[in-house]
Length: 199
Image (tube, rainbow, N blue to C red):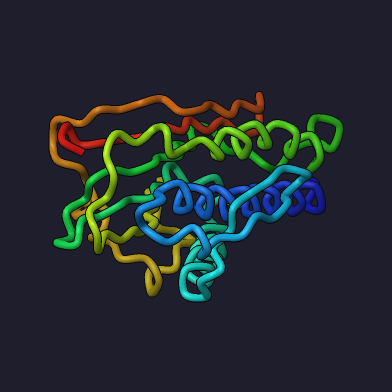
């Protein structure tokens, strides 16, 4: 195992996930006012970031808690779920990790190579609002939900085990493919939007 290479790749994935979360939240323009977000640069690409300390801390802390699952390859899926004021899940953006193996030979991939593969998704996220059919009702909120292959390495004082069932959308569900990131031998992420038939 080439630990310095693996650590650099894990850091790239964590930075990527945090940016993805911020951009997905920003795409729901009826959730927070536009002035709650600022434009920042990540890897030379414009990215939206929430100025609200509570939101920023929540997303940053969530990524920190996901890091051991990313490092071990146990993370299988992570979703940003949007709920109605009554707590009913309305829609969600899903990042499905079909493959994650970051302990690679240095010659196969470096951090900059991974960055080049991930930036197209960050660019497309600038238009993520077009993927949603209906606005969120006033008072809606969101939560990040993670699914893993095993609980080893998961901080169960942070993650609630029963949140996954309460975040499932009611059938029928309309699924829209959004983007695929495929780095052969290293990482494959399928990104899609799930929406309830009426949402």
